Length: 394
Ligand SMILES: [Fe+2]
Image (cartoon, rainbow, N blue to C red; front, side, top):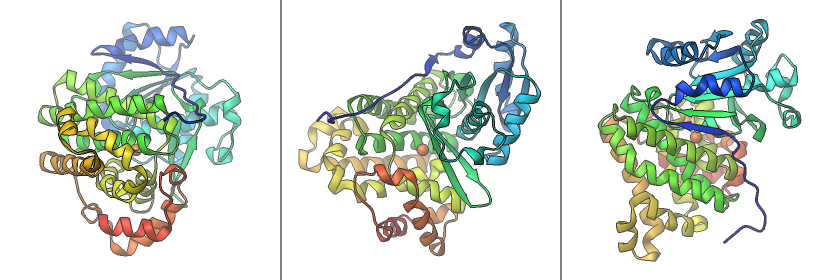
C-alpha cells in the first residue's frame, strides 16, 4: 500500500567500480575545489589504503590541503571540533573522508561546525540551521560495507562526558559524492566483514518494516537484501573477491539510502545504547539484536517480514513456504545468517559474548527509550519490553 504522503531524497552522486577512486580529481574539479582535507585514521594508513587515494589525487593534479588521521573508532565532539579547526587553519575547501562509519560521521560533524561558522558541535545540537545553507563540498569513500554513511544524512557522534551517542539527522549532511571502490574493502578481515555486513542487513530490514517505509525506500531495501544474501557468503569465503566486495559495498549503499529515508527502529535504538553504555561495536550489536527485535515486532510487521522472506532466503524458499509461515521463516533466516557469520567469522550471537552484563541492561533499556530510532519502530515499546528483549539477547 502506498502511504498517503511520503518524502524521499537521494542526492549523492555514486561512483561505483574497480577504479572508482581514480575519478575523484574530476569530481573535485566539478565542485571547483582545489585543496581537500583528507579525513581518515592511522590504521587505514598502515593498511596502505590511503596510498590508493593519494596516488589518484596526485595523478589528477590535486594538492592535498591537510591529512587528518586522528579519528578514533568511536569519534567524539572534541575530535569533530579539532578537525574543523585544522580545516580552517590549512585553508581547505573540501572534505574527502576515507574510512568507516566513525570517520564519515566525524566528517559530517565537522561539516556542520564549518557550515554554521561555529567552533563547537555542541552548540548545534537540535539546530536545523544547516539545512538552509550550502555545506562544504564533501566526498565520502567508505572502507567498510555496512554503515551506508556515504549516502545518509545521519551522523552519530559520541558525547564522552554524558556516555551517550548524539544523533544528527538532515538531508544536508548527505555527502555530495559516494565512492565505492573494492580496493578499499578487499583487505577487510572476516570478523569486520561479517559485523558490518550485518549492520547493512539490519538497515534494510528495519527500513522496510519501519513506519516511514515507502515504495522507493522499499525498492532500495529489497535490492540491498538480495545482494547481502548472495554476496556476504562469498566475501566471507574469499575476501579478495573484488566483484563480491563491490556488490557488498553496493548493498550497504542501497540499505543506507533506504534507511536514510525510512529510518530505523528498535534494533538500532538498543544498538546505539549498547554502544554508548558498554562500547559494543555497532555491527556486533546489530547482528545479535536483529532477530530479537524482529520477534518483538512480528505481530505488527508480520506481513512486511513475510515479503522480505523472498529476499532473505530467495525465491525457492519463499515459494515453498506457506504464506502464514513466511514472517517466522524470515526471522529464522536472519538467525541462520547470524549463525553462519558466527561459524565463518566468529561473530558474537549474544550480548554476554561482547561483555554486556545483566546489571547493565536496565541502563541500556533506559537509554534506548530515549533514542530517536524508537519513534519509527512499527510497534510501540515500553521500557519493560526493551528490557525483556535485551535479557533474551544476553
Ligand atoms: Fe546501523
